[in-house]
Image (cartoon, rainbow, N blue to C red; front, side, top):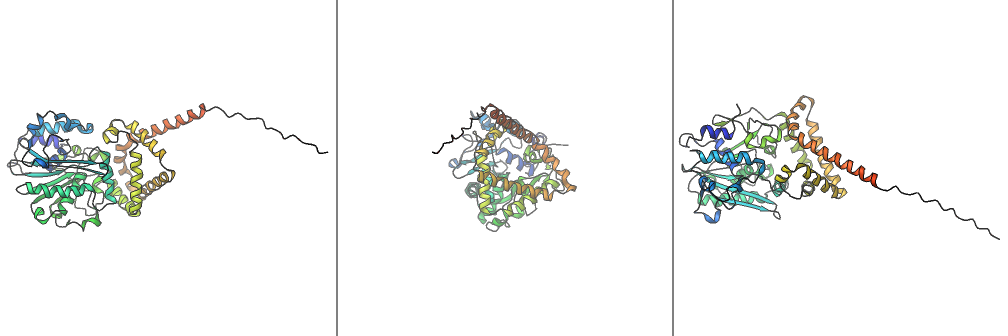
Length: 417
């Protein structure tokens, strides 16, 4: 059996929340649904008395703009259709939509509130989308106590709590899950008391040194974290180990995609533990970060994104649709870097590799297959571009005219007399 959230909707979409209570799969569906581009469609905080239904959105002139992320266009369209046609989600109301993209602040933040007739409200934080600035903000988690997105998440929860009448759920996928637990931890006690559950789907953890600065322990019992067997994103800064592992249809980093998570009846299908390779990466990342001080982390992040910024289109959809072109651009960006920065980047990356290799003993090396499967295509493309660049350089060298050897002039001997 390999049911996903789409099959769940097909099977249980006819059941209202009175017949089948709100659960973890519903939270995952709403967390994924928050990735759709609701700009200009769903009202923002300035229209507190307004909302839209799925039926309204379906008939909106900008309906197709919801699906501009081509990586997930097909499943997202099916998700919308199944939700809109179901009894369970068909009368869903949406409002309080916020979407902030800022290069100078290095912020990518988005949230939306879902409301059901049964009195169920779900505050959903969007995870990292295709904007490169969002990935830069993610990287800043390792050097900042509070990234701009987390600050906005706290403000959003405080503001929306004033609008919502009763208790509510909070959740999100990836960075959205981190924003959910961070905002809940930092919220006033009056808001915390109204939170019925906090859902994080493969979201990074709050950094251990930051947890004491927010009231993490005060909401820990309401926190439900789910990760795939080969979790990478969800293991970042994870030391609490209160997560539940979920069966997945895919391999490696591709398991981060909610459409690959396996549903069994009305719940997610649980696994006993993380894969061995995921445990290795978790420990290696933790050791690697300990070896880098704040200045080194900052410098490393700047170097990585200097290379990434060489992609002219500067978003993940463009990289996804034109991978070879993007690899060429990033390699050109790397070549243009200062030699000292190139050497520093290689040195830090070698440190991560050595940390990983030191943990990957013979008895667990087989576990790397699942990661290899998901990156093989990129490795082949990178190798292809490298060979292409090498051949181009050799061809250019051959075209250069040979240097003529000039005859050596002999000094004339002069006679004295």
